[in-house]
Length: 387
Image (cartoon, rainbow, N blue to C red):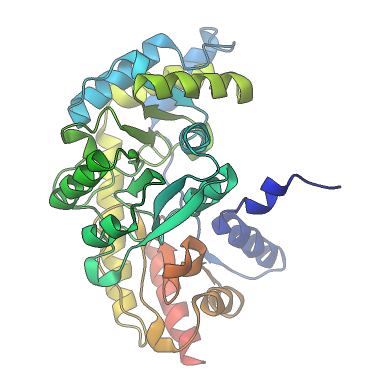
């Protein structure tokens, strides 16, 4: 079968590949500690589950508008107003099946041959994949450990050309757990305004923050009209399988998103949308408990990794990942990913799964129990001693 050339430009998400290999090893009897997949291990809060069940019984099982149910979009608009301080209405909101369509549809609508888009590297691998798929040029902005995996604003400025159309930011970030400071966001906003850039702000981890308050780039002058926000229920409410994402868009881009939704998905599942109202307006105590648990796990894994010879690990400020430096082992990231899985029974990801600037690092997701994290730490230490 002969595929279109553009398919050769489409990347993948290594976490699912490593998960598949880990499952194969488990099927052969090997015990694996899973620290590879970016998925909260908590149950979806009961009040949200009950709201979805009731929505099914109430008949919310049919098609809805492509942009989303109006009453749900109103709630999401109100949520953006309260949490970002922006003036949002339902016309700015599109609901999609998961967060990825927010990124995919918007970038496909905005980018074409000859355009350039700047994206964080190491960063979520689908950024680079979709930019390449669109036919545009993917330009990485390196996230360096010495900058706490934040942006070097002057380096960013040097990467902007007359062809740059889109800038992607992600805070709190996958895979590093880094958080962009308010002063840096302000400078990034100035660069965007000066160069007429559209900013994609991936804020899917905005509630999983371990200190201070969440800062969005939309707070700065001129940014709501040139920014689209990627958000959703998946991480905050442990709802990865529900596939409910939503975004804030300038109205012309919201209209383009709606057209793409009509052509691709028709609409997002109606009863899951109704449950979204309960998620955003209902009891939030389970979110607080989850973040507290993640903080304890973070402290455990960071402390444990820093005790292992050849590894150093910074304390992430958000999300639920650590991105330890393994350069002192003398081994490549991919080698250690495979070695720890096959010999140590610990599933993790090579830093290069998140871009070329991830070499010398591994990503561990601490969305697992303290008991399993401690077991993994012991296995990592013992396995590395055999090198």
